[in-house]
Amino acid sequence: MTNKEALLKLEHFCAYQERCHAEVVNKLYSLKMTADEIDTIVVQLIESNFLNETRFACSFARGKHRIKHWGKIRITNELKMKQISAFNITLALKEISPEEYESTFENLAEKCWNSITEKNTLKKRKKFCDYMLRRGYESFLVYDKVTSLEKEI
Image (cartoon, one colour):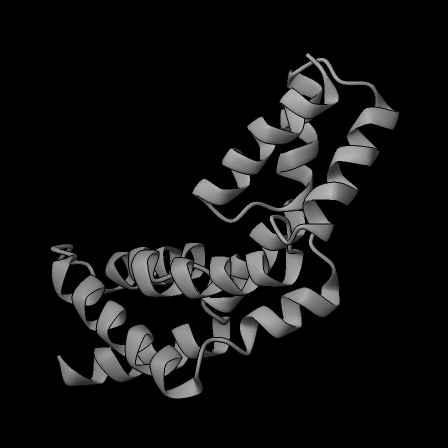
């Protein structure tokens, strides 16, 4: 595959959905490109604004929070796995307003607590905490919420 063909293919790849640098590099390796060719193509994609890591991080954080209801810890860890810089992660987390974050957390917590049919309070509490922590919410929020939900019983 020539550089021009690869560039066109990657432009379509990046135009379809926001991509991070690591995804683009992996795609280029799968197309059997050399390291020098990959560097050249990545630079061209950045210059033509097909590839922008800050834009990717912000879009990722907004989407995962609004659609999958992930907490900040999970979003941060996923962005780190995609090799996003700490600066961009901080910017991305600012995309989620504190009010939106709190309301999403409250709604998810209520829904989760009500859906657990466990009769044993300790087991129900553990299932709730495990679920909310897996979703990436801060432990102090989860434990405060489980305490307030238990009092309502």
